[in-house]
Amino acid sequence: SSPKQVNIAVIGTGGVGAVFVSQLAWLAKHRPSVHLSLCYIAMIDKALYHPDYSEIDIDTAVSTLESTGRAPPAIPEIIEYLAGAPHKVIMVDNTSSGAIAESYPQFLARGISIITPNKKAFSGNYKLWQDIFSAAESGQALVFHESSVGAGMPIISTIKELVQTGDEVTRIEGVFSGTMSFLFNCFAPISNTGSNAKWSDIVKQAKELGYTEPDPRDDLNGLDVARKLTILGRLAGLPIESPSSFPVESLIPKELENVANGNEFIQRLNEFDDEMEKEKNAAEKAGKVVRFVGSIDMASKQVKVGMEWFDPMHPIATLKGSDNIISFFTKRYGAMPLTIRGAGAGGDVTAMGVTGDLLKVITQL
Ligand code: NHO
Image 1: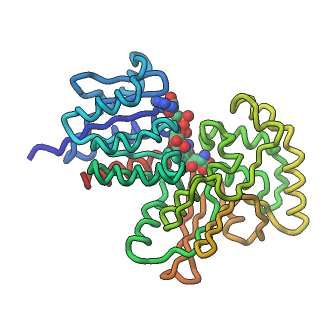
Image 2: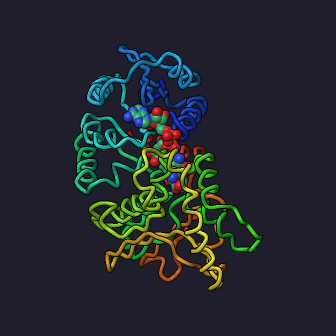
Image 3: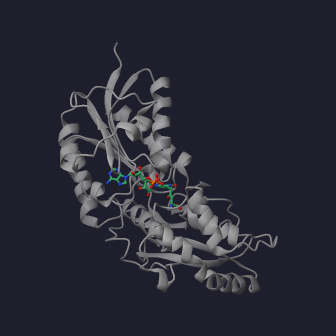
């Protein structure tokens, strides 16, 4: 029989998006049972698509977009175009755009499924969350966002399965930011090997490695972790209003809160080095190391994000690189939580979560 056909639209071809497109090319070659037809690809100022939905070659899509792309249409026009495609459509949002996130309900209502690592929609106000899932139902479309927490690791799918099989989540805790993990693992290593790297230099490196959000202030102000906790808390059954409805410790110096852009921020961050050095030394004196963690306590409905000190033997203290560690305490798992640990940031692993979602959607459509 002829293969199932699906139309794919990719918005965003940066650190995650470009890797996703190469994984899509791999999938197209290794999954002959589905024909993945790319009909739209765009970045912030360019789009590539044909009014007759003729296929864009996946292997060369990003370079063709860069060389021949034209000004992208407005979001309602993108929705109109995709809604008219000949097959079921999957829109992959690899941007961090708030405007695109806010229009998910309109995409879904027109039967367009969504896959995304973009946290904005699921951690915006609670009304948007409700609108998204009810639009998905009425439009018979699917929405998957595995990479919005823990990059490629099965975090969202795990919590969904715990809840959907009748377990009760009582507490979630861990290190949710690949950037923060990397920063503190380098800045305050457990074995005192005399790492004297400066805080601001490590931040620069995290940005270069592709771990940070497009604007690294979104990592350092704790908002990225707050967004992830908002998503997990909601999936566990807590109707968290927004990522600003609970205490979040920011590592942005007051003086730098209003600098114009991420680059200027990075340049001036060394003004903050002394303050971080003090925190690290105080922890060291107490025989501890500093880490940046988050937790949700379901019974007391308490959510919090910030620096804490840990014994060097603690699993949270022994993380390496950009690792995340996320522990689910549940009725079923009792005193020993279900814990997932591994790389939590970077284009390759984040794109994998997106591609994994694509496989799930293709099977379910
Ligand atoms: P980039 O490299 O800035 O790329 C953004 C792309 O979107 C560009 O091609 C830009 O042209 C396009 N774009 C922006 N606005 C657009 C618009 N309105 N229309 C069309 N195109 C537009 O960003 P990344 O790094 O590729 O990130 C893309 C998305 O993935 C973001 O939503 C980000 O939050 C999400 N994400 C990234 C990572 C990561 O490692 N880079 C992770 C998760 C999700 O697991 C990772 C993580 O949590 C990282 C976090 N910082 C951490 O834990 O430290």
